Length: 539
Image (cartoon, one colour):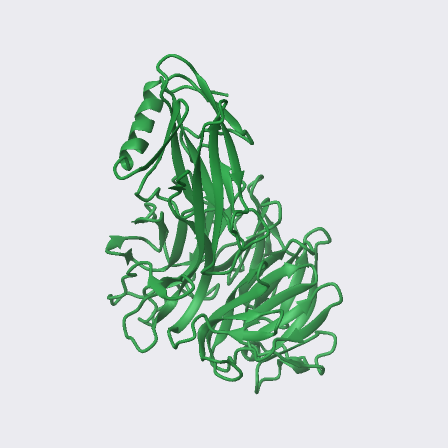
C-alpha cells in the first residue's frame, strides 16, 4: 500500500504529531527509512506510536513489520497489537498488513496497543522489528505494566485526605487526581458524598479512562459528574449532565460511551429523576427523555449483551413502555432506538446487572426478593436462582419483605461453569430450597450449569459493609474483590477493602504485605495495561 504525505491536511496533521514530541526522541535508521519515538505522553494509557519516514527524495520504498508478541512475556496470549482507524491519524496499516510502501519523503505512524492479560504489577514485553527489502532493520522493545485503577470514597489508611481515585502498580498506591470535595454541595443530601466515584471504564480504542460519580472538579479542572483521563491530563467532556452518574458502559462496536444516573429518590417521590445519555464523537445525545422512555427515577446499572446490540438498564425507575410499567429494569435496542419491557420486572431497586455471554442470560441483583435472578431474552422469561440473606433477617425462609432483603451488587462470570456474586449478604440459598443456606459473607460462587451455590473460603465479613467490584485475571487464576470490608483471619497481613483471592489455592492475599491500604469504600475498579514508550534496541 502506498502512503503519501502531499496534502495540506495530512501534512499539517503530521507536523502537529511530529512537533508534539520532537525533542529527546529515540531515533533509528534502516535503509532509506528513519524512525523515531517521543519522550512525551502519546495522550493514551495503552497506545504508543513510532514515526516511520522515507528519506528518499525521488523513489517510493517498502518496509516490513514483524511483531514478536511473546518476548519475555508472563502471559500466554499476545500482549501487543498494531491498531489503525479514524482515531489514529496517518496510521501505517489499514488492516492486517505486514508491509507498507511509502512515497518519496512520505511518512506514517505505527500505532501499537497493549492488552496484557497478566496480573497487576506484572510486565509484558515484545519486540517490533522494521526491515526493508535489503534486510536492513531496526528493533524496538515494547513494554507494558498492568495497573489497577480504583474509584470510590476513601482515603489512605490513617490519613484524612480524600483520595477517591488511585491506581495500584503492584507495590504502592498512587493518587491519579485530586477529586474536589471541599464543598457544601451534595448529591444525596447527606453532605458526605461529593467526590465519590461510582464508575470507571476504559475506552478500549483510544486507551482513555473515564471516571464518573458525584464530583465537580478533578485537579482543579471543572467537570460535571464525569471526566476523561488521557494519560496526561483530565478533560470534562463538556458535560451538561443533570445529576450524579451511577453507571458507565463502553460500546466497543460503535466507540460510544453510555452514561446513566439520577437522584436517589424513589419513583413517584418528589425529586425523583433519572437519565441515560450517549457520548460519541465528542457529542452528547439524550436517550432517556423521550415519551417512550421508562426512566422516571435513577438508573443505577448498565450492561450490554454479547453483540452490543441491546443495552440493559436497572435502577429505581417505574415508567411505562407501551402503557405498561417497566418495573426497575428495561432494554434499549441501540440499532432501532426502541424500548422494551423485561416481563413484569422486579419489585424493588436493581443495583447490579451482568450479561453472562457463556449462558446468554442477564444476571440481575438488588434489594428485591429473592435478590438473585436472571432474564433470558430469547425466551422472554425470568428465573430465580438464589436468595441473598442477612444475619438476623428472615429472607431465606421465604419472607419477601424488602426491608429485610440483602443487596446484591456485583457479578462476574469467568467461564460457563462459574460466576462470582458480591453484595452485603451473609449467606445464600437456592430459591427452591431456602432451608439449605450456605455461609457466604459478601461473596459467593454459582455454577449456572448445575444450578449450585458454594461459599468462598474466608470470605470478607460484611455485617456493615459490602463486596461490589470484581475482576478476574485468567492468566493467574486470581479474583480481585473490593468494597467495604476488613479481613484479618487466616491472612498474613490485614486486607482493607480490597484484596485478591487465589482460586487455585483458595487463599486471600493483600495487595501489599504492609498495612498500606485504602480506608473507606471502593465502588469501581478496572485493570489497564499501561504501555511505556517503545525503546530502540542496540544492535
